Length: 81
Image (cartoon, rainbow, N blue to C red; front, side, top):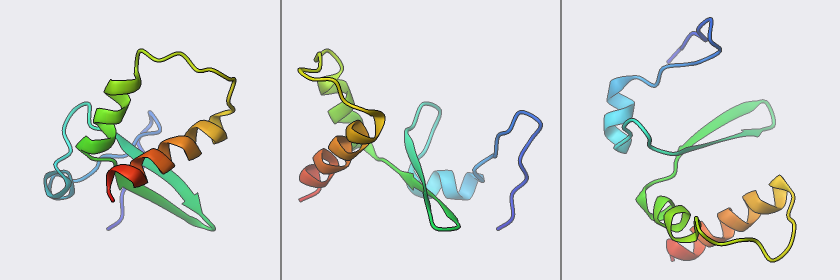
């Protein structure tokens, strides 16, 4: 499937893909690069529950964005076990 980047630097996820993954306005997705490939992954409700449950927590130590991403990936893996 070929998509076009708009003037606003955005892409539109086609309806059949959004419906397949249950994506709607406000849904969270993860985007990363692997070598020369862009990977877009639906996060799903489990990780959104983690975000909601930890929203009020203040960090005990300062973390870089990369360290936070790794922490979230580990917690998401624990949920899916």
